[in-house]
Image (cartoon, rainbow, N blue to C red; front, side, top):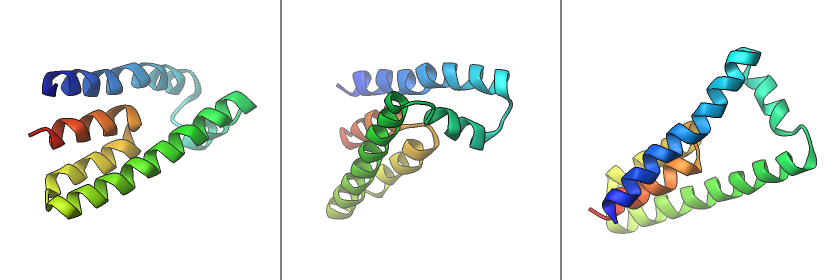
Length: 99
């Protein structure tokens, strides 16, 4: 399973960033404009809220689990979640947790 988690980590970086980098290339590095684009319609707003709830839930679980187990390296999955996305944070935490 550790190899699968690691493969999903790589996919969780490459797949979204392929689109993010294309968007930045076309629109510049304006984060505010990107956030506006995320809310361009009801479908994309729904996905933003879905991922936001998932990210917050994952963060709470990571903090609770790391505190309970005193396994502090797992906390690195929190910034990974907010800097890249749940697509990296979740498989990264599962990879670290499976040590």
